[in-house]
Image 1 (tube, helix red, strand yellow):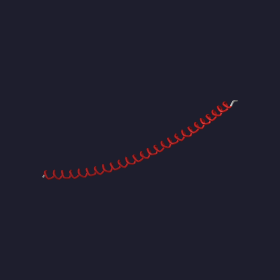
Image 2 (cartoon, one colour):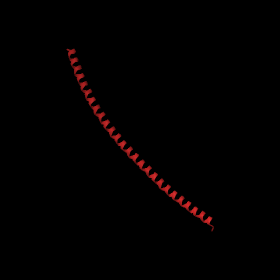
Image 3 (tube, helix red, strand yellow):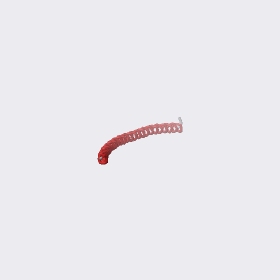
Image 4 (cartoon, one colour):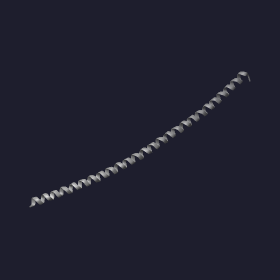
Length: 97
């Protein structure tokens, strides 16, 4: 083998090693990117679950408040109705005499 052939083979061998190292580094970087993407997706999912729980709690609190207000309004309406009915009965009794 000539010196040129030996140099060419050595250059080819080095090129192959560099290609293999490049492929290995690309694999590691790709795996790291996948891991970061999965981590980000998990964080987003947890945040979404937390927001959903918070929204559900707020909805329940709002519904409880609305129910309480509704009951209070109904009691007030019933009291006004009873008072109006008493006034009407009194008016009927006065006019009936």
